[in-house]
Amino acid sequence: MGNNDQHHARREYAGGAMSRAELHEDPFQQFTTWLQQVIDFGSKDATAMTLATADADGAPSARTVLLKQHSANGFVWFTDSRSRKGHELSVNPRAELLFYWRDLDRQVRARGPVEALPPGEADAYFQSRPPGSRFSTAASEQTSVIASREVLESRVAALRAEYPHGNVPRPEAWIGYRLRPYSFEFWQGRENRLHDRFRYLLEDGRWRIDRLSP
Ligand SMILES: Cc1cc2nc3c(=O)[nH]c(=O)nc-3n(C[C@H](O)[C@H](O)[C@H](O)COP(=O)(O)O)c2cc1C
Image (tube, rainbow, N blue to C red):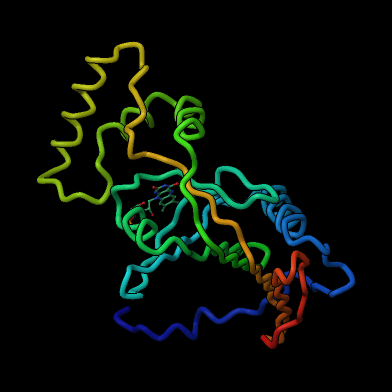
């Protein structure tokens, strides 16, 4: 104890190999294949991703959010636009997403411009959430300072009394965002740290694929 040396945690990465021939030409299909494999493996939080943004001065910040939709149009998450990430995306609408799938020794990065989705999409997703989550979201102005947990709990209680049927409205600021990648990177851990890495770059409407040094 009291020792910050992490060498005891050293381990081999032998989750499999990734060859150029096996890659999908379309990175979205490659992503979908990998995500499904992580889900099938039974990993917890397969859809948890790190969202990295930066403020107007370029100072970065990162946090975890959950992937809620993905398609050839991009990756969607929901959040409070009054939060730090919301402010950063409004002044600098670009980001990187990162998935770390420990059980399969894999990492995926996707970067690109970010757009706010129309309110109707947030309504549809908000209505699909369990009532408890809807009340918590409605009671919280994300990332604002609060005096105590009791403040939050009493707001939830007041909302529950006001909306006994659970139909609390979506806070206007709680919206969806979509990142449309122009670049992906897929990383597969291999033995002796000689890992496989492939980058997809969108060039003139086509995905160019390169192997990167690990
Ligand atoms: C596993 C996990 C999933 C999370 N999912 C979300 C999410 O989908 N949306 C969200 O707004 N915050 C989510 N959070 C909380 C964020 O990480 C973060 O604390 C919050 O969004 C405020 O970030 P900001 O102040 O940098 O904007 C999640 C946290 C964890 C650990």
